[in-house]
Figure 1: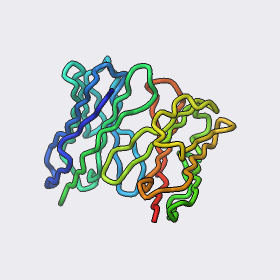
Figure 2 (figure 1 turned 30 degrees about the vertical axis):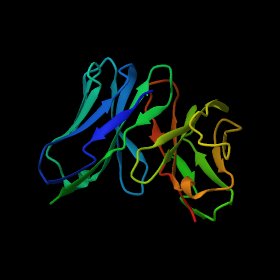
Figure 3 (figure 1 turned 180 degrees about the vertical axis):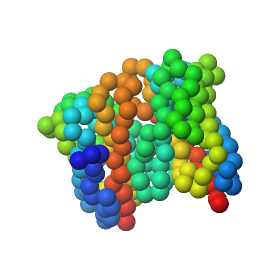
Length: 112
Length: 114
């Protein structure tokens, strides 16, 4: 059974810092791994999707990496801004299933 | 509409009441998902439809939970005899179908059972 864990649970940093959010999963037989952003009172917005055959994906200041063998993914945010404050969730999609298994999220606060 | 639409956005129910939560997926999306998100937790899978067929309902926590998508578009999640532990955000999501397609989430229906 796939289990997804995210650390840290919460993070507070000053504006401008580069930061790394961690995600680990127990079953390496994944189809893809996705990172989502959730603002308070809102739904989830997909940020990056990494297929199992890929090592990383980049979008603007965001870079996500995937290491299937170690069961880990990281989300790197460069030059953080107050607008990046949100909860970041990673989710794994295993083969032969259509359901995403989510971690509990990292709550990020970037202060000016 | 441009995105996944859910209603009501907020619902307060007395314990024992039945509630119905509606989801309008993005037009043309074959796959529809329901997730439950408790406060401070990640979303937990409830059920999945491909068109009108409910292919997986393994995440429904009890037989008080029922979901349908009779015409392969709009879906309704019904919770009978609500309990306090049902208080959560219920998220609906849709995609074009097939593994690997981007999944789009609605803003959720916030259910509080008092």
